[in-house]
Length: 441
Ligand SMILES: Cc1ncc(COP(=O)(O)O)c(C=O)c1O
Image (tube, rainbow, N blue to C red; front, side, top):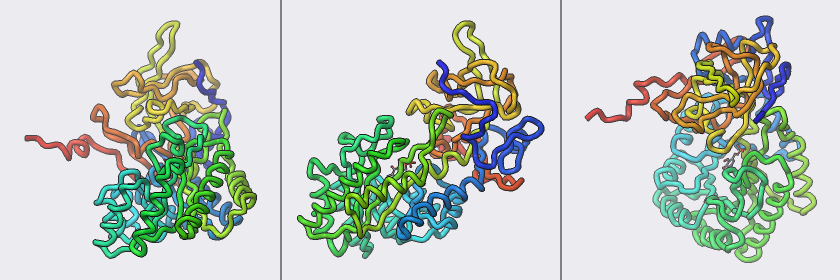
C-alpha cells in the first residue's frame, strides 16, 4: 500500500535551512549531508539550529503578543539534552520535566527554577526530593496517593511547593488511542466525573500552607489537528476551577493547557498554525468569560519535531517478486520506535539523489530482529542501491529519547548544524558504553 508520496522538489517537511545543492545532495545548515555522513557516520540525527531557535521564538512571540503573561514550557520528553536546555533557556521558555535525569540536565545549565514544572503519573520519592532540593516550585499532582507523599517530603525539606492538579476531563482529542491522555480511561490525571479531582483539591488545600494549591493542568493528548477539543478542555477546566472556588474557597490562578499540537510527518498532513492555536484558545477564553488566569502551554513536538532529520545508510535491497521491495537501513526501531508503537507514518528521500524522480514504491525496513521494525510501509523513491543515504524528515521528537539498545546496538550520534558548522551534541554510543552497566561475574 502506498503510504506516502515523496514529491521530488518539495522540502516542506524538512528543516528550514534545507536545500538541494549543485551535487543533487541535501544540504542543511549550510552542510552537505553526504559529507556529514562521511564525517560522523550513520545512523545520524541532524538538528538545524536556526530552525530550533526561530521556531521557539515564533511560538513564544505569537502567545506573548496576545497575552504578555503566557508562559511556554518545553515538554522535555520530546527530546532533552544540555544543548537543548541551554537553547530553550536562552529563548526564554520554561520546562516540563518528568524525571531525575531531566532535572539534572536543568541543574547543569542552571535553568531558572521558577520556570521548571515537575510532571509524572508515578513520581518516586527520590524524584520529588530531587525537584524540591533543586528549588523547583511547581509540582503537577497526578493522583490522590501523590498528595500525602508530596506533603510528607515537603515537610521534611521545609519546602512549600505550588501545586497544580492534572485533570482527566474526559475529552476525546481524535488521535491515536496511545496518544489520547484526557479520556476517561487514561492512566493520567484526576477524573472530574468520579469526584477524584475535587477530593484531590480538598486534600491539597488541607495541607496549606505546606502545599499551595495554585492551579490546574490538562493535557488531552498528542498529534491533535482539530482545535475543538482544546475549547472543550478549557471549558471543563474553568468549570472545575469555579467548583473549587465555590466548595473549597480556593482561587486557582494558573491554568496549564498542555501541548499536543499536531505536526505534519507526511505531505498529506499540515502542521497546526501557531496563530490559529492562539486565536482559538484566547477566543474560547473570551467567550467563556475566563479572565484573571495565568496561562501556561507545554508544546513538545511542535517546537522540535521538524527541526531534525534522521540519516541512514542503505544496506540490503530485497525485491520479493510480486510482493514488495524492502530497502533496509542501518537503523530502525532502536532509534525510532514510533512506527512500531503507534503506526506512525513518515516519508523519506535519498539524500544523494535529491532531484531524481521516483522510480518505484518500497518499504523501508529497519535492522532490528522484529518483523514490525518497518520504518515506512510504502514510499516512492528513485532506484536505490546499497550505500545510498536515506533521509527521514520530522525526526526531532520522540525518537532519541525513546531509543533503545535492542539487539545490543548502540544509539546514534546527534549533531547540530548552523551556518556551515557542525557539532556533536550527543556522541555515538559504543559497545563499551552499552556494556558498562553489565556485571561480568
Ligand atoms: C503532560 C504533557 N505535556 C506536554 C506533552 C507534549 O506533547 P506534544 O509533544 O504532543 O506537544 C506531553 C506529551 O506526552 C505530556 O504528557
